[in-house]
Length: 209
Image (cartoon, rainbow, N blue to C red; front, side, top):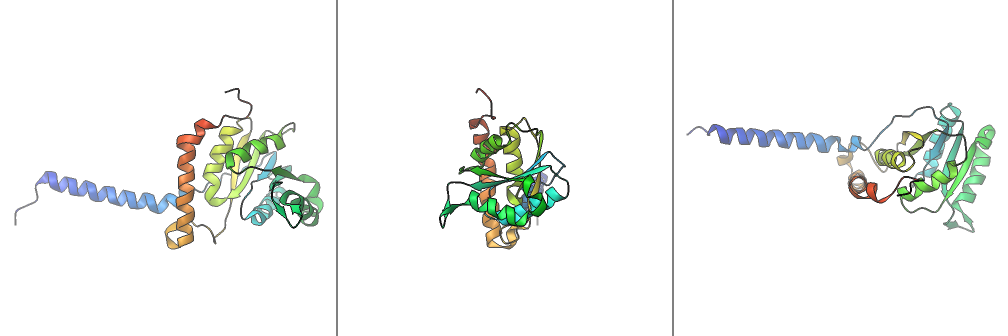
């Protein structure tokens, strides 16, 4: 048997190394989506999400733990459930569950369909208050993109983020369940879309451009 020429052997070795690196990158791509750099801030914002109840309780726990002076809960004003919109339901829920902290919790009524539009509406809710730093509370798989978007669109505030875990929808080991695979793929599409296109389409709030 003739020995494999060194150039061909080198090419095979490089290809093998490339495949290994690709496998490692894919394996860790779910964890890359998750950011947790929570910091004590002037305000806490709980963004709109399918698991809004879970995010609310995480936000309230952080508020009571001294991570913010007040909290804003994003709730929709344009979706009606049995005669009441989500923002109205949220206000009643806060009165029943926030107890002594209810005066520190505000509803930020939104109508946004995208995270970028939501950021602008959050900016309106924060405007006119003595707030310089904000802690975001979001779904874990959405945390990296949310931090990038809010930091870009509302640069007048210092942003940090606390992810909300929901094992029914996502996990860093995204390849183990079909629903986790779907969530990871969709979120990666959205993250790339933001970085390549929407970052340049949406101007920071208050910008004249």
